[in-house]
Length: 582
Image (cartoon, rainbow, N blue to C red; front, side):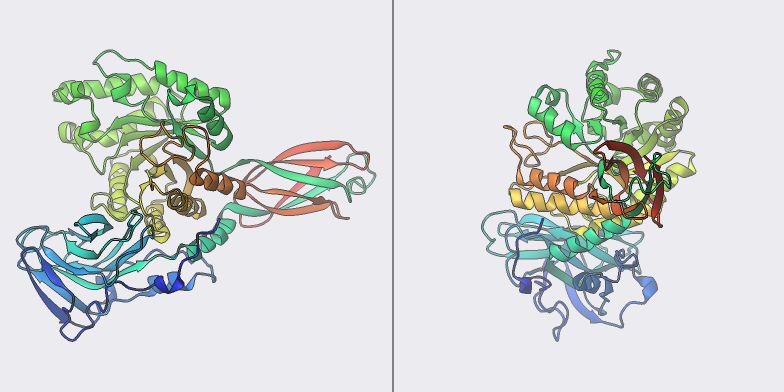
């Protein structure tokens, strides 16, 4: 499961040479657009002017990797460049990177930015972008900053071409015209993924495993133990308590290779489109759940729980035209009819519902029906069907590249819904990722976990055309999710070529062959499944450490008889001790 080795000297090398260390502080920097630049030096900002440090993964772990510790401990220098007299939000500053980024290597963007002057009021988004050759953007980061404070930029990029670019520049911009901003200690460094993955394996062992002590005895033996001492024993995990699922489609389940991979490798399902309002009622009054029923029946036959996705969708262009044409009273009546029709029909069938999809990126219903309508959707869903956990669901929250979808804004959305009486039962982060960086994902998860709600990755896909890069990206996200104690499951947004929303995201090619990402995925599923075998000791005891989930134990007696029992390993801080009488 290791990544290809790369030159270690390249990792940690800052491609923004010298940042503000030169004598005039501006060496290498140039205006981008209409603005003036000036260099400044002051005492490093006080702690109350800084955001909290990058979320710690050192949850009692003395084995935190040196490189990651350096990133967490970095302190601002107090030397910065100020961009003033800006006439447009795209105006700012730029500089060339000291060397071109290597193809297919993920880079981290980090630094401190602030806003102020020029009449700055309220928070503003500051963007850092990396562009190559013909001004093509390859990634970056964004942070929303309050005046008088420093924001911590966390972002990433990658050049996915086969050949290296001729050159690259980093640009900083974003606040409205007239608002000054400042940049301190900008860094662009290649990410060494290997130490992070090593750390996550150890963290997953703590978060997802438990010591188990089986105390066995025999009903036929006089002392109970003599009949089992020395007997051969095998423990097999038959279900992991951390489910991994996928969306499915009506077209997909007609394909035998699709069905085979899904049933062998996934625990849960979600319908990609067939339950959405625009699908079940494309024409007003003509409601059909036939395709949804077919897919749900397929899942029932194969024993796969189904998530409800989704009752509503907040983004206007995802709302069907006839709904967009309704006036206020008509729209409210249509919303109530949708709730009664869908939620009543499937009452008790779904363990989860995504109630109003992507509220960070859309406000179709709240703009027309008032601020309380989103909470009303949650309250009414719970009234009609109290069984499922009701989720919010949105994208880009884990990527540090979208000012509309910061973890802080997501937490604020959840808090507002709860204040209005919405029974929010979980947080969904979609996971449509590009060039992921592990601890940036972990930072977002930590901030969301502060709500106390369970988190699911609900729509994971990675789309690098290069198979090796895609496999690495998938492993990064899956390991971050699996090792984080607040994450309770992962859903992939498709897995087979020709049956996916996103190109180059497949685990399985159209001909049924596994891609490298598919092989990596299957390997992780094997790694996260525990089996043990050996002999019962003289005291009738057998010990092992295993992932949380359901197990079967097979005991072979001296007479060659095989006896079986089933047990569950749940989360716990002390060893699980089970008495078993065979």
